[in-house]
Structure formats: structure tokens, C-alpha cells
Image (cartoon, rainbow, N blue to C red; front, side, top):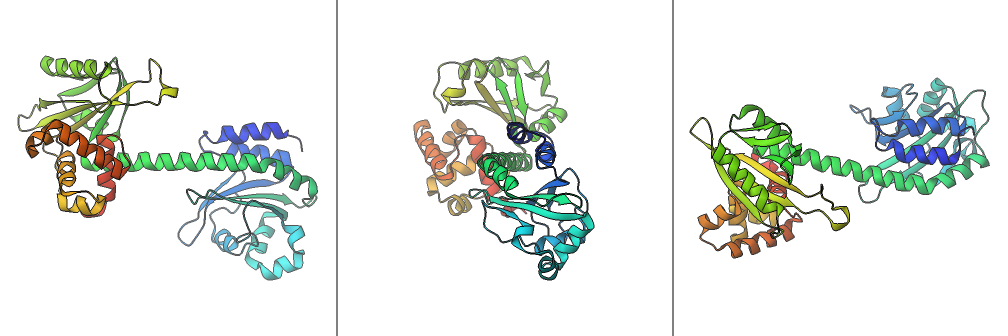
Length: 369
């Protein structure tokens, strides 16, 4: 084993944030086990889907033979958390007879032995199938490799858990971006000094086409002075000592004269342990008044288990109203709509209005297909 275990562990965690992930870890794992190839199967292959296999030496990856070989694997249904050696599971002749497709696949690769480990992340259901292959001219795997995998196992469990969480978060971001784009809801995240931190795809599209809003010098600007003053006032108010759920909304008349842009500023709450002078940010939600989504309060009652009053409020917010505008339209006090919004947040598991709108779009997406 030419590479040290400590180096393998460091590469394991470091590879999670690389693009593509896992490859550098698998490469050093080849050196560590002195083998021909290390592979990680992240998605099961099927007809029409070659699956997702991460490997430095891909061989017959993606071929129809590989797909058939996977479903004929002697490791397919073995319990998780345990390392298996093919040569100790069965003699070569038994392997050839019982798992013909898998045997043929490995013959093509020149494989003489396989070290296998299956792991499953329970929360996400993601499976991780590690396969380490030795080729002709090498010794079969033995006790030394089993002991090494036992030492690696706790770190592999942690790393696969981290990776699963990262994938889930990326999926949530993609869903949020997709639904925000369909809704035409742009979001620009600013620091307290007005510096742009990030934009979602809808905001990028809006700022490219709108002449009334733009980013210059890394800051969000309004084309007209009065609008710029309103934006500056909102940032100043939310950057100060205000309630966590405070918001500031104003409208900008669009240059076409037939519509307007609704801007809603909301402060983003950062957990205390991560907070510093640069961490406090403010989200600016941007939506054109002509961008309307058809969803009824009755549908929201069923989709989100809301009361009729809560559903009416949620519908107004999805239509683009600020909380203040929704209160005025519905004839309710601001304290009442704040309490109702808090109840909606509790039922949907979100904490901000833009998260609520994205959640409603996601849950009710079939209504607009």
C-alpha cells in the first residue's frame, strides 16, 4: 500500500467539493490498494439509463454489457456496511455459472478479484457501491485489505452522508431556481452596504432586459433617483435594529408605462454562530406586476392544509402582493396578517416569503403543466 491511510482519508473529504467529486479519492484508493481500478456507482444503471459511475478508468462504463452485469452482480443484494471479497465468496467456476453476465464483463476488464462495499444514506435513500478491482498478475484481496476497509468505513459513512446532504441542497436550489423562473420572481441578495452577493436566474433575466433596474460596480441600482432613494431607505431600515420579519416594499414604474416592478426587501437571518460584519444580508424580491400566476385559495387549502383565511393571504402573496398590500386588499390589520403568515410558515416549514412562494410553486406545479 504505497499511499498512507491518512492521505487517503484527507483525499476522501477533499474530493467531495471537487468537480467532478470522488475522482481524486478513487485515484488515490487505487494506489492505496495497489489495484487496477476503483469505482463508485452512484445511480443504478437500467435500460435507457447507463447510471452514474465514477471511475478513473471507465473501461466498459455505460455499455449494455455493464448494465446487464450490474443486475447480475453477486454483490447486488448483500447487506450494507460489510466488505466482501469475490474470491472468498465463491470459486471462479461458480462465479462463471451463477453470474454469467457479471463474469463476462469482468473478463473483458481483465479482473481477477473484486473488493466490494455497499452503503446507503438512510435519510436520502442514496446508495453508494464501492468496487475495487484487481487484474491479472496481481494477488487476490485478503485480510490486509479487509482491515484497511474497516479503518476507512467510519470515514466513508461520514463522507457519503456529507455528499448526500450536498446533493439534496443542490436539488433544492435547482428546484427553487426553476420555480422562481417560472413564476418570474427574481431574487437579489445584498450585503448591508448594497453590494450584490448573488442573483437567481430569474433576477439575471430581469436585470438583462429591464431598463429600470441594473447592477453596476457590483451594486443594485434603480434608473430613477426617487426609486434609488427608496431602495437606499429600505436597505438602511432593514440593516438597523428591526423585527426579524420586517420587510420594505415599493413599486417602480416600468419604462414601458404599462406595468411596474414590485420590490420587496427582507432581512435574512443568519444563525448566531455564523454571524459577522459581512454575513448579514438582505434579499430583494423583484416581480413584474403583469406576471400573474393562477392559483385559487381553495387549491391552497387542499395543497397546504391552510385555513380559508390563511389560503386567501397565501394566494395574494403568490400573486405578487407584499404583506402590507395583502393586508390592505383583504381588509386585515398588519398584526393579523403577520400572525397568519407565521402560521403558514409553521405548516409549510419555511421561514421567508420567497421560500413560501417557491414552495407553493413546487407543491402545486402540476396545476400549471
